Image 1 (cartoon, rainbow, N blue to C red):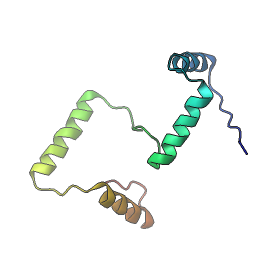
Image 2 (image 1 turned 90 degrees about the vertical axis):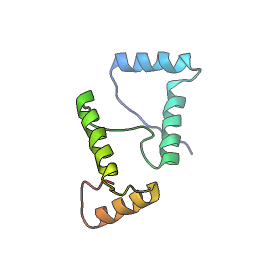
Image 3 (image 1 turned 60 degrees about the vertical axis):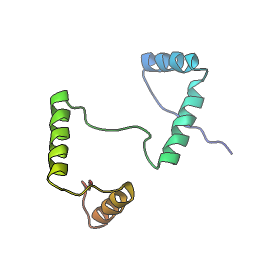
Length: 98
């Protein structure tokens, strides 16, 4: 049995999305289904979700990461990262990161 999802968006966003998806040969319902399938396959949002930042802030983060790596700091595999995050969350951390 199929279920219905209703989402309220402003007229301009809906019209723009409809036109974009139509140009790709899709309707908006199909595009939303594709998003949901991709989210399930990825185990989360299928694109980066982050706070907006300036290029200078991103450059600083990258330089800091390079410095940590050059100092010999260990980097995790994706599986180690997930395990680290699960353990931190289980211990009550609200900001677990790798």
